[in-house]
Image (cartoon, rainbow, N blue to C red; front, side, top):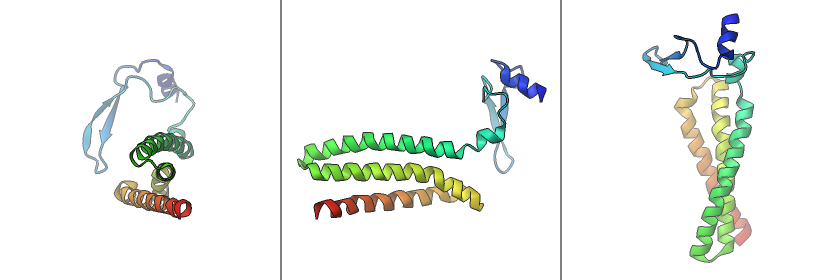
Length: 151
């Protein structure tokens, strides 16, 4: 316990404590990962606390998805308005992109958490489910908003 706390308080790691062995799931040696400084600067923090920060990851990824959605929605809306000269279509496409990227960010965090909770490896099935969610949400967001606002 004292040695671990000591390593966390150092600016640089002592000799032979600055390497992590990287091992594949089938216990095959992959290589060595060099560390320049400790992975955390809070000596009282446990590895379990670092690894189980899913709820903060949901908030961060949703905020990044919202920012990404706003930026791309504005860029595409301006292009559509310039190209077609129609503000309504530009607004509908912008809203659909924003909704789709928000749902994609939320699903990108939630799907692996749910799969891990059920006992399924997220690396095997997560991409298929995530692609399905983004495709369905994008399809219905665009066509649903167009139906509600244009017809």
